[in-house]
Each structure stands twice: as C-alpha cells, then as structure tokens.
Image (cartoon, rainbow, N blue to C red; front, side, top):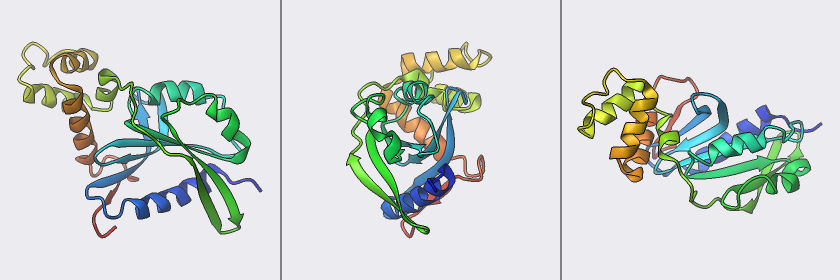
Length: 199
C-alpha cells in the first residue's frame, strides 16, 4: 500500500528532531499558514532560518503544488519537497532549483527512508510583506513600536501595518523578528514543539 501523509509526517518529524537536537531554540511546527492561511506548509522548522517542508505522497496529486510553491517562495528561507517516486520527476519541473528534494520510500511495514536528491539552498526572492503576514496584528504593531514608527498606524488595518514595517525595517530585521515571534507563542498551537539541546 502506498504511504500516506500521516505516516510520512511522523517519520519526517522524527528525522528532523534528530537532525536539530543540538541546535538551540529550534521549533518544529505543523501546518503553518501562509498568506493568512490561504495555504499551509506541512511542516516548518524555526531556528536561525525558516525552513518549510511540503509533503507529496504517492496518494496525493501535484494539482495544488504550483499555487503552494508561489506562496512558499515569498516566505521561506529554504524549502524542501518530500515526494514519493511517483511525483518526483514532475515536481522538479514545478519547483525552483533552490528547493531541496527528498524521495520517501517505504522499506518495510515499520520503516520509512528519505533519500536526498537535492539539498535546499537559500531563497533569493524573499518578500518582506509576505513574511510579515506570519505575524498577528498585535505582534506587528509591537514591532512597529520597536521601530519607533507606530505613530498614526495604531488603528490602521494590519495590511497597512505590514506595509509600513516593510518600508522602515530591513529584511534581515523583519526575518529575525518574525522567527522570534513564532518561537514566543508557546501555546498557540498544540503541535509546536520546542527542541532544546537535549532533544
């Protein structure tokens, strides 16, 4: 039987926990919404970078991948596609060449393996406003206060606050703030798992 998303997700989370067990302040988050929830990446790793993981099992289709990739390409520092053999060659035509690719394979009833095809590299096309949309309005306004640019914006719509921050803050500062805020939400989602040095 082909593997489904649930089995692949469980195996991938186990792999990521091992991979990042020695990286302080690493969080693994399920179903992170992008563009106010218009699309959701399957898994996101938050530490010194924001790394998204999109799963496409052999039970899935690639119908939504172009739209998903368009959104992810604006937000994530790195992206990795986890795909069954059925999809990998077609998926390569859809995703940009900075995305990593892993083929997932069921070796036995209880064993799933991931084979590296391409390592993820840094995203050259990040968009500040799209990254800022990961913040709740109150968080964005607090950030604008820190930038000493909140005057006249405290009662504005969140879209105007995001645009204001993008004008007055550097992309580096915005990326750091968003990652910090995601890590400061310890109870906002049950799947958020802090990874400390002891794993």
